[in-house]
Image 1 (cartoon, rainbow, N blue to C red):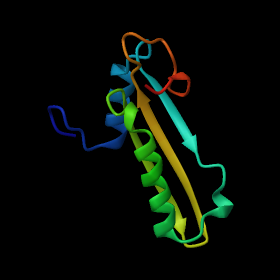
Image 2 (image 1 turned 90 degrees about the horizontal axis):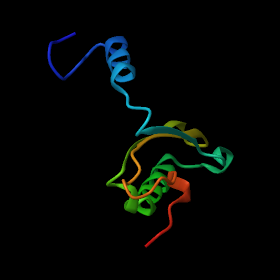
Image 3 (image 1 turned 180 degrees about the horizontal axis):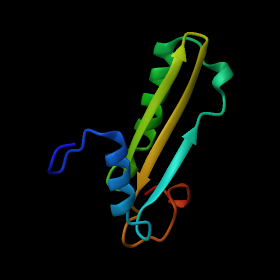
Image 4 (image 1 turned 90 degrees about the vertical axis):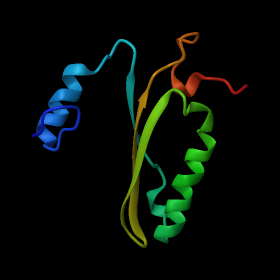
Length: 100
């Protein structure tokens, strides 16, 4: 572990995150892709993830997300995690927000 902002030890980093996480203002969302049996080629699955992030463009000011494709051709799964901070003028959850 190093002093300062960057932590290189996973256990210390996770401990630091939960000690400083503001659950009153932020929320964490986990996403599991429902149709993994339809995923074929890895590059096509990566394009699917990219398309999802394009459609979530209006959340970029209020969310951080990471998606990972695990596996290989014809045997893969997609998982994602979101750290969300709702706009100050809206108590809504991400899936309740309306498009402008």
